[in-house]
Image (cartoon, rainbow, N blue to C red; front, top):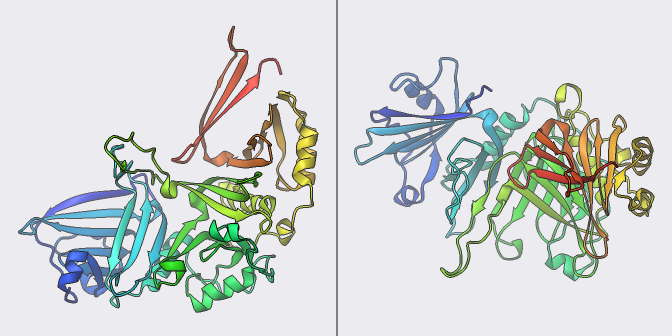
Length: 476
């Protein structure tokens, strides 16, 4: 992949390429239509000579004077600038720099173009200006002219580039939640809140292989969740978010967001609280800076806080329809590195034994055993209890364990694991895992004369709240 993820070069000369005619509305709307890739490759290897000798143009699109090209090595966007078109920018983004992507189908008559969005990390000067992202080089959006590009073919092509080639015949395996009986939300509040419930993984696997050609043949759905109209799919290769747009999801416009497992750096699950807070959550930290500074509503208002957008995701679950500890076990299998610091191969499905419901009272019994002492805990005893509760992987062991108030922190041979008891009643609990492979730096601060607590800080790979701070009692 190399250290340089992308670069832009300028060329003094017109790079006009022949292709299908672009309509006036498409020019103003920046809508791209597909053009002949062999002709584009021939031009970019002669005048000007942009491509490498062994580089192949595999897909090419054109809008007015500009072009969007997908080659065997990179994404290349050609921006012809100025009235004369003599100034041309060639922006290259290497495939390993791309962290995720989404496609959005065309809508009604007023919204007739489909869209492709690529997410990546390129170095840029941070900005906190209202109405702008913190980093301007983390998204690329391409509008395709309706009927002039096969959006799902583009999706399959990018999937092969980011997830690995589709070379294995389709499997019937679809996780141990196959055949899960979906009884609906059963709650008006959950329906209004768009809380997700677990649905049949095998049915979702069939739907997104055949009815909607989204998945690779060698890719299979292991867990599936459905809200009021949207869906979340956990496959052997990625997370997929299906966003049905329009009134009550009845419009034609649908967005499919794909996040490869390698892009997820840390994760947590959060149990439901009491009273108003009745949903549980799955939280994911992603490896690209998508933070955005919204505009204030009125000039006299203070600047609103930044929003994470795709840098950090929270997925709401209906508490009585999803076992959060089971989700945590699943994420541990998919996101904790194994031999050679690699993710679990997609050819190895998550064991069905890990996806069975947790025994009743598992969390309560565990927290009662830990107690309220603000000090170190016996790591061997914790290791035994955590394995009984199914929280740790089979080959994972606790090295250090600490309890501070209601919260606790554990260091295993694979991760930093935190249990954060929240709210006045303490019913809401968050279980956060930071794999050792994504930790980037740490510090310890010894106790002082008046400050009797030691302090541990850990920074991990991510762009949103990616620091963990924990006080530890001196002498304990």
